[in-house]
Every structure is written in structure tokens, then in C-alpha cells.
Length: 451
Image (cartoon, rainbow, N blue to C red; front, side, top):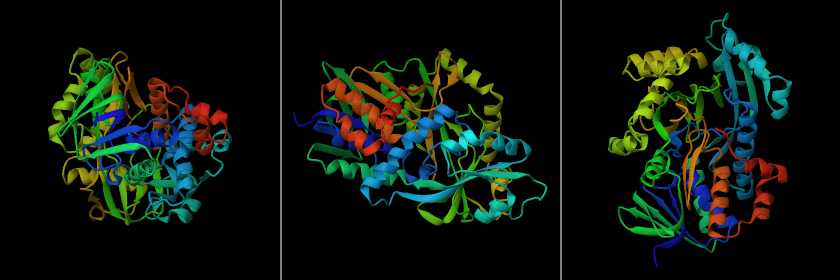
């Protein structure tokens, strides 16, 4: 049949497109379809929708040692892909640091960045006021001389346009001699199982696949529940927005973040698409959408969330966390016009750039995105990190930050599942030769994740 495929991928962001690439490059699977409701990389992977950071675990102060090693190994796959490509308009080197402000944060950085930690990242070093002034002068200018500051600094950072990376994955896949089809600006609206195949219905057509992967953010849970998967899961849609100013920094400046909190602390970043500005964010707002500002996605959000007793009890339990309470309350104030901008400046931006004034920052209207935060209804808690559901010939990916940095690791996982299910070949040696320094690194990439 014309619309028959070995694998159907729903979602053209960096997860779905990296899977398209790995299937085309490292398997003998021949017929692959990718369905995307917009253009490639225009959802959460779009440069305006995220912080454009390649997370490796060195300045992410909420990561434990296991998470650091896992993230570093996964993110380095993108660097190796870039090296193979030899030309890369989607990634740029940049300096970076995590900034500690005040006694408590200073002590946290000194304690965290000991010899053992620095052995994982030899390029990182702890610097104080005079050295910060040399590498990021605007972090010190205008600051109260009695305010303690310290930073863990590295020259080895990268900023990534994940939308362009998504396009690169597609272009690389299309160079293969396989039957790869793209259906763009075409929304998947239904999924059903029929014998040994899945039937994916869109606004325009119907497709039949033997193996299906949904890499569509919060929509993945919506479609999973249509097939009876994920009944023990719920979700919160978290909207992240940004402010911006003229460019006042040279790289990326992150803030100290507590462990166990899934919401990123506000940080400052040079914009990879516009070096004339610095962006600040993300803010954190709980919204009833699956897509940024798309009120038409509310119905599917409610279906994905599932408003049952367990979900309500989970939300109550989560809301009782004092740190989460504080974050939600602060960000509610930040969402109030004019007043919110004032408090965001004083409480967040001025902790990084003390000299900026009210009129120096503006709301980043064209930016912002949605991240699904998945809830374990049995444990009544948020699940930190990537969540995926595996069924019979079908998988569902939900990847909040730093999912984009781990896209090739996620693609490897789904590629192995697809070849195993379809009784096809996975060219492991070819993958290891390109992406891994040794067999141990490959084992780490394929190690089962813990939540």
C-alpha cells in the first residue's frame, strides 16, 4: 500500500528528527514516515522557545552525580555529530558560568565544585569577584560591594539552535537511499491498533505503520491514553517566557538551583539568533495548554491530564512543597503587567546584571514555550527528567529539559526498540565508531534510566 511504513514518527522536533536520522543511518529499516503539524523544529525546539543551551551537567547545580554523567555522555553525541558534519550553523561555542549570589549560594558553589567534581570537568574553575569582572564585567558593575558573589566558570560551553539542528537531522536522513517521507503542516488527530499495524489518522490522510513513535511533547501522553497507556500518569503544562535587554554578557550565566525542583532557575543567555540581545528566563507559569498560547489545545490537555481523584491528590501534594509554592507565587506576580516586570527585574535580572533599569528590559513577545512536567499518580509527585511509555510496537516520548541535549541518546533508545520489534538490523559497530570512545560509553548510553 502507498501509505504503508515500517516506522511512523509523529513529531518533527529535535527528538523526532534525531530518530529519523538514526533510523536512516544505523539500521536496515527502509520505509519511514515523519508527520509534523508545523514546520520542522518549530515547536519546543524552535530557538525562541527554549534557552538554546547544550546541557552537559557542569553548571546545572540541581543534578546529582549520576545525572551529571548521564547528561554529559548524552550531550556529547551532538558535538560528535557536529564534528562529522564539519559545518554547523546550529551550534556555537560560548563561555558559561553558574553564579552564586549571597552567603548561602556562595557556600553551595564552594561545596559543590570540589576536586572530585572538577575531575569530571577539568575546564571548569571557581572564580571570585576580580576574575568575574574580567570575564563578565556587567555581573559586577553596579553591585553592592558588600554582596558576596562567586562563580564556577568554563570556556567550553555551547549554545544550540535546536530548530536548525532538527533540520540538519532531516537533511542527513534524506541523503540516504531509503524511502523517507515527510508530511509537514499535517496534524495527527487519531491513532488506533488494527491487527499487527497502527493506523495514524491526520487531517489530510491515513497512514499505516508497523512501529510508531510519538515524539510530540504533551501530545504524546494524550495519544498514549487514547490507546490505554499511561493511566498512572498525569501532567502539568509549564509555560516558560523570557525578557530581554541589549546584549550585556559574553556567554551564559546560570543561577544556583536547588535539587529536586524541575523548574529552571532564571538565567541569562546571549541569543544565538541575535547577538545584540541578552535573554532572561524562563519564567514559570502553569497553563491549561499543550502548546504555547494555543487555547484550542486545552481539551487535549485535560484528556492528557486526566482529572480523576489521583490527579487531584497529586496536585495537592505537589502544591504543598514549599520550594514549588515559592516559585509559583513569585512567577504569578511576574505575570502581572508592569508590576510583574518590575519584580522580575528586582528579584531575578538584577541578581545577574545589577545595573539594568526598568526600561532596559522588555517582554520577549515572540518567544516562550511549553514543557510537559509528568506526574506519577501512584507516588503523588512530579517525575524529574525524560519520561517515555513503551507498548507493543509503539512508544511515547515526553522530554522536558534537558531532553533536547539528550536527543541522540533518546533516538538510540527508540532505534534499538524499533529494530528489535521489526526484526531488523541495528548497526551497532557503526554507531559506536561514530559516537562512542569505547564500549563502556555505549553501555552508559543504553543504561536504563531511573526516575
